[in-house]
Image (cartoon, rainbow, N blue to C red):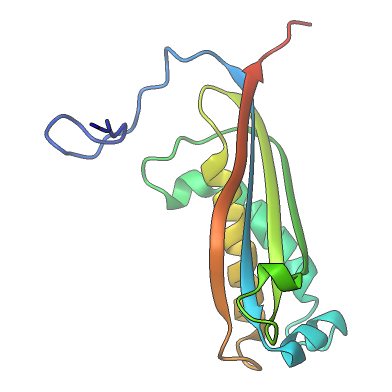
Length: 163
């Protein structure tokens, strides 16, 4: 099976994909990831006792900002005009963690736009930035944290309805 990579030329050089001939469509992408931490750190976050401030609110805003700047961070990513960005953070459920003794925060994101290319990079960048912000704000109290399982949940595209 031969796989054709879209971001390389025939000689293997990097290139930005030409999307000019693609139809404008409604697009949506959802992504998620987890930051694993001690139960004590999760309790400090829940009780708003982290010295840097309200961890979940700051991380939510960081994720939204990051989605809007994905093309600034990823060289071959097209800049998109986003219609909607949602970043939700919540305590992880036991099944989302590597062990029963672990604790953590899940970041779930959704990005919507109307354009010629999808929004999956924006959704992934939003989840990553939100989790990195949690890490940054809590690193003074927990140096064992680790970010894991950042992944695309779903991407959808559909025709733009005429008014």
